[in-house]
Image 1 (tube, rainbow, N blue to C red):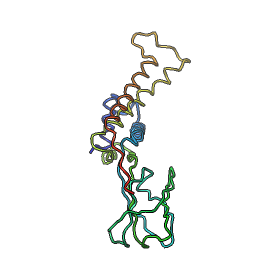
Image 2 (image 1 turned 30 degrees about the vertical axis):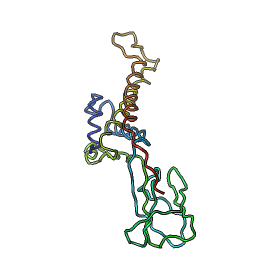
Image 3 (image 1 turned 180 degrees about the vertical axis):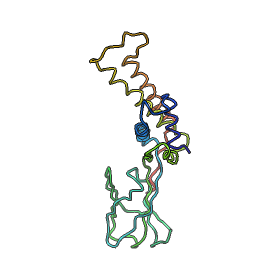
Image 4 (image 1 turned 120 degrees about the vertical axis):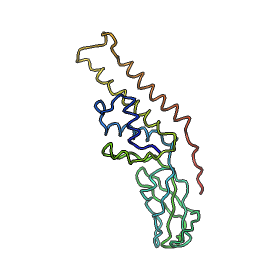
Length: 214
């Protein structure tokens, strides 16, 4: 599986910016993260967490951070405390939130106290957080194998559009009439090319949305 460092290397090669002099490393990483965010919900990761424990006379529970805020695929509960045997939770509701969804039990009879919930969601890809290129070498891409190019293509679309504002600054001497000069339309066409490549590949690699189990 690809690492963040390998994707940075791909971006450096396409931009001819091996030394990160045009675009600093943190900015490249942020562009890659934007690309990963733009892939959802067509590309996602299945996340499962079983740290949430049933409490006595408690009917609402904050979703554990480990499952994020993606689409809920299933909610299960242990048949007894620490039994490691799970069964589907039949009657519940999920109070949606951008940051902290809530699991709400509908029945008055709660599951056994001490039993664990097991929640599965289809969530966004995990963003890269490496503070340096060396650290990025141990940070793994969490998307499906074969989709590693998608964040790079999106990052190229953003990166190649960066000079546009400078070209639109009419306070400076115009260079548009010089031989081989690059104008705003040229910059926008290059940026749109990379974003079109991203969208085309994203459509081809889109994953079927999981069917909720309960």
